[in-house]
Structures are given as C-alpha cells and as structure tokens.
Length: 95
Length: 475
Ligand SMILES: [Zn+2]
Image 1 (cartoon, helix red, strand yellow):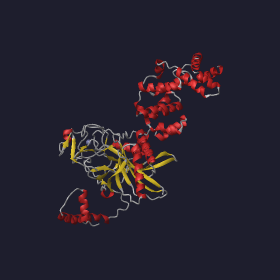
Image 2: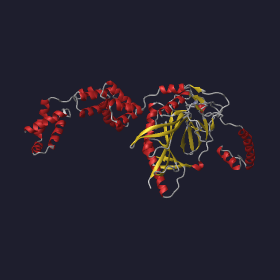
Image 3: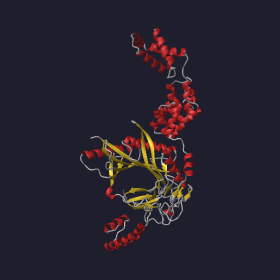
C-alpha cells in the first residue's frame, strides 16, 4: 500500500491538524517509508498464530467496586482555559 | 406495492455500579457539575484506567439473562473521535471482541411468540454531558467514565410496535437482574434505532437511517412510525434514501438530519494499550449464573401453571418486578391468587396509571389488599363498597377494616331492614310499580338501583334483588 497526498490530507483532518504543502510532501515520503518498514511483517507466516494486543503476558488487572474521593472542583478546573459556574466552557459544539 | 420495515436497535444502559468503570469516582446522578471527577475520568495525561470488576460481573449477568454466549477472551478497544464531552479524544470500548454475543429475547406479538436476536453486548465508558448555551457549550464530566453496556440487536423487528415491545421487555429484564436502574428520564437507558424499508417479501435490505434521541417507549414508537412513512413516501416519489443519522424532534414530531454518511466518523479502532486482556473462566461465569433471579418469562409461566392466572394477566403483572413482588407477597399472606390478580389488573393498575405512580410509591401494603379482599369474601362489605374502601386505603394507607368500621360501611344483611327500605322505595315510585305490572321488567333494575342508593350501597345486592321481586309481586 502506497500513501499519496490525499491520504495525508485525510489523516491530518481526522487529527484536526493543518500543514503546509511542503510539510505534506514530506509526510508522503515519511509515511511510505514507515509502511514499507512495517510491511516486513507480512513476510512472516502468521497462520494459526493468535492475535496479540499486548507484549505483557498479563490479564485481568481489575479493581473492586469502591468509591474513593474525587478531586475538588477547584482542582478539576485548575487547568481549564475557560470556565463558568463549575463547568468547562468551550466554543459551541452541536452534533 | 406493500412495504415492510426492517428495524434494529442499539441500546445503552448505565450499570448499577457504585464507582465508575476505570476509576473510583462515584456514579451518583444529579450532583453539582464536575464534582465526581479525577485524573482518570478527566483524561489527564499519565492517568491509568483500571477496570472495575463489578462492570464485568454486571455485563456477564446481562448476557446470561439475554441468552447470550459469554466470550471468555476479550480485550478493550480505543475508539477515536473528537467531541468536547470525551476528554481523552477517544472512548475505551470493545470492538472485535464483545463480552457477550448471539443472544435473544422473546416477545409476544399478535402472530405469537417472536424471537429477536441480540448480536452483541459490550462494555464501555460513558461520555460527559454538554449543555449548549448561547455562543458556548458547557461541559460536565460527572458522567464521564460511568460504565455502560451497549446492546445491539439483529435487524429482526418489522414494526414500531415490535421495537417497542422488545425495548420494554429488555428494560424489564435489566430491572429484574438489577444490572441497571433503567431511568430513561435520567439517561441511564437510551435507545437508538436503525431502520430501512423494502418491498414486502424481498430479502434484500434497503438503505438504512439511524435515529437518535428517543427518550421514551412512546417516542421510539412514534419516531419509527414517522421515519418509516417518510422513507416509503420518498421511494414512491422515486427519491433515493440517503444513509444518514437523524434526530427525533419530539416537539415537531419529525426526524431531522444530523449528519450524512459522507461526513461520518472514521473511528480508527485499535486495541487499547492501557489495558490488559480480560480472561474469564467457567467458575466466574457460573458464580454469576447462581445469582440470577427468576426472570419475567419464567415467572409468567409459573403464575399461569401454579396460580391459574390468564396469560394476559400474568404477562402484565410480571412486566414489573415490583408489581410481581407485591402480587407474590399478597399470595403468601394467604389471599386467593386469582382474586388478587383481578384486583391488581383492575383497581390497583387503574389508580396507578391515573396518578402516574409505581406500586412502590403506594401507602397501602399487600396485607391491606388481602384484608380488603377477605372483607368481601366474608360478606362484610359488597364489591362496590370495597372499591370505595380501596380508594380510601390508597389515599390514607389506613387499614381497610378500620375504614369500614369508622365509616359504618358494614354490609346490611338484615332481611327485615332491607325489606323496609324496599317498601319505602316502592311507595315513592308508584310509576315503576305500574310499569312492572304492565310487563316492563326493566322497572326491577331501576328499583334495585334506588334501594342500593337508599342504603348508601351497603345493602347486600343478592338480597336486594330477591326482596324487590318478592315485594313487587305482592303489590
Ligand atoms: Zn474519576
């Protein structure tokens, strides 16, 4: 699979990022190099090999259903760029 | 051409855990904004989610109650999207490996029992809430990280009514198992629908739309009715149905476009790197199976077999776990099951519907109802008086025996006393006596009514009937 500029545009849009034409050209090259590198994996026969989601041989990291104190409202809003009556205030979003 | 609808539902239910899915903040509803938040549910960098074991327990329970296969090896997935109520810019959910799959619910349609398939149930976190105000949106993250199960059905429903019946049955099962409190007004049970239409008899699917924002059973039914008609009309006019998301506008009674498929999200799911595999064993699943209560279908079957209730009555009483508990309590105290069921189906449900109340809100107890019934059975009061005592009992929560005593409602069974009232009524209504003599038997009913009225409903109706006829014949 080879990446062209339209795919760079699409990924940038999904990530809400903007780039110059020059940067996008560079990304086309970078993306293709990364993909070529990862494509190496296709050379391995993975027939009958189970999917792996983690390199740690671990499972069931669980906690009991217990309530513990939350942060104070001041702490919650400490880094908020904008706030109102205890709410985070953001530009209007309507789905 | 005749059309048929094809409907599938996606239901989100908040689980009844005390704490959130990945952190120890409380799930309590209705508190001040942003007071139930911590680094995990605010999505602060470096915070590590740890799965709440009860979430898994509840989801397994829901899966077992909905006849699902429980998948022993699953993992969480990351679903990427930008919306200000999702603080991490992704939601931790399940994608390729839902915890439960391939279940079903049976509903009673006019054509008989119909099985609606459940494709999957998976666990995930809820998002925060956005309030839209003027130029801004205000965000409250108290709901962020509240555990959810998402239940996805197969496209097995063919009418809005079937969809409603399915949703009602599902709610009933979730309430029986106490997996969720299912408060639709508080958003702890939410339903979206996928709907398409096709020529009747066709096996191919038409283009579907997704309907959101249906906050009650009635809204679900109305929104689907509207959408199906809209699609059929469009096809008849030769228009193309567009795959899109539409919102039900309750006030306007219409579905309105939210976004079309062209702008649809690309969620780029991948295995959640902050979490490890979830591995269940038979023992875990069996332990949960042991806690399973009797479910509505089993209960209904038992009421029919054990108590001889009509299927219709058994169905209604078992729909509500609390109503069923009230019925069983009354039966255990020693009332006749059929009489109790008749009272519940009649007076009790009538007044509850009238006042928009639940059985758990009433002042009287199951014991009071049994007492009231036994007052009728012993002949102390008539059925008509009993209905009045019931209203009194409902309003005040007083013992029915006390109400009867205080209001002097004891039935008159003294033959001489009733005969005296009968003769008084006959004296006052000579025209009716003449009518009777002229063969108008309707006159009897009128006289009986007058006697009952004169006795303030207290005279024994059978005795009144008998004595009116006797005295009329004497005249
Ligand atoms: Zn938290």
